[in-house]
Length: 154
Image (tube, rainbow, N blue to C red):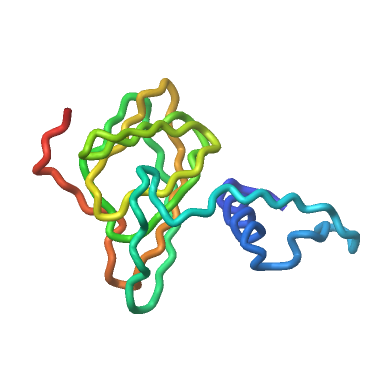
């Protein structure tokens, strides 16, 4: 069986949430293997300390997105309506809030994005950023990101 990064990320998330029980059994035998469960994050706040909002009403929609940001690339000012969090799997990403607060993520770091707070990301490193983000959205209602082009970039 070929294991892709997409499969690995999905299986890791499902196992960490204890969603399916076959994670602790070897694929080729009936023997039970030792599964290591490491909780990466449990929080009610975004990276800058703001409290996350309550869930919206309506049918939930879960969205997973892989972002690849070239070295030296700066994303535009934007904000998120839907709660989201992710794992940086390669590179270094600096996130800058409109208020001037910053955080720099490195490979393996988990991030909870701000909701309704304007910010942008920048790859100040020398290699591409690979970031997996998971959005807790609402079916047919919430955009993943809202651009704020009226704010000039630094």
